[in-house]
Length: 169
Ligand SMILES: Cc1cc2nc3c(=O)[nH]c(=O)nc-3n(C[C@H](O)[C@H](O)[C@H](O)COP(=O)(O)O)c2cc1C
Image 1 (cartoon, protein in one colour):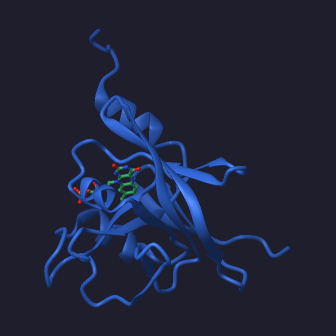
Image 2 (image 1 turned 135 degrees about the horizontal axis):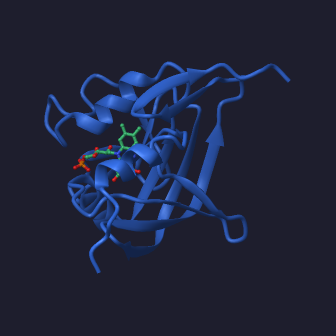
């Protein structure tokens, strides 16, 4: 059935729903680090601990991460705009690629943890469902952590990222 919803209108309306910003990282079969910016990250289940996100079916990064069987969700905080745009736009690999000049450590799954992120969630792939022009990826959490100090958030809204100063408790 053909939809009567114009794709640009769909994007514009959905752009009014603010999301957090993450970089989902992984490794390819040769051990090369991979990553892409993902706003569709969601908490799925507490018991068992599951999280999810939705990569587009045209993503070049996702099939390569999927082959490895695990991924790490890196939660961006205030002021990390450069990481957000770098992992949305830069070439996939190579010296000039997404990881050029940035620091990262290795999670238990082998996936990169980007230095300075405000939280990370290391996962094994539990299930992948095809949903329209996206996949819904469900990950089983194997380890996770967050920054100890009080941090401000990064939010994506109407095509722009903004740092949101959180009130002190
Ligand atoms: C704030 C933000 C959120 C994004 N969220 C998603 C998302 O949830 N799913 C997705 O497929 N692409 C998302 N993208 C776009 C991808 O980051 C981008 O298309 C991807 O890096 C393409 O690279 P790839 O072909 O290497 O996968 C988002 C981009 C930005 C800037």
